[in-house]
Image 1 (cartoon, helix red, strand yellow):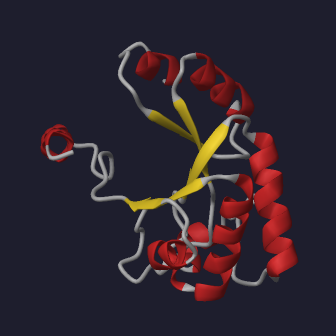
Image 2 (image 1 turned 90 degrees about the horizontal axis):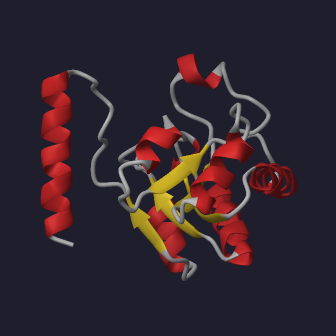
Image 3 (image 1 turned 180 degrees about the horizontal axis):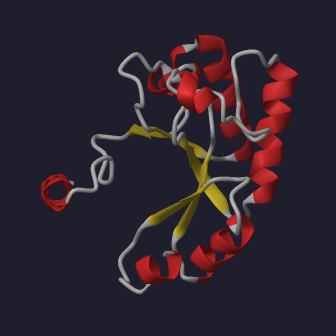
Length: 166
């Protein structure tokens, strides 16, 4: 799938889940194709359905600062060439100020930006990043939350409008 995306020859950010199969190889391939590599940092979700599937790569609410930092640094070590971080989920953790301060501190130390995927309308991640002076952005919409052809066409139309507006 990554190679198909890269054959489009358009600038994209390739966001890699740290403990996914082929994570390291995917980051290397993306970097060699001159594409941005991001860490798709797994964080504790609100949904119990997803919370039961958390791996050791996840940041979660029970962690103290040292544990969260250690896990985040370990995740970064699995994915080379990372320039920024986003959260594929994490609606529970992104609502918590202190863990988000710890996340942003690591981002600052590592020279990384942060994109809040806004998996929760109550996320404080963007605000905390701004308060700490970290380069950051928020997701505006998802492209693939509904894979029905009509829904995908609408999502891509929204993406084109967004791109035209800069």
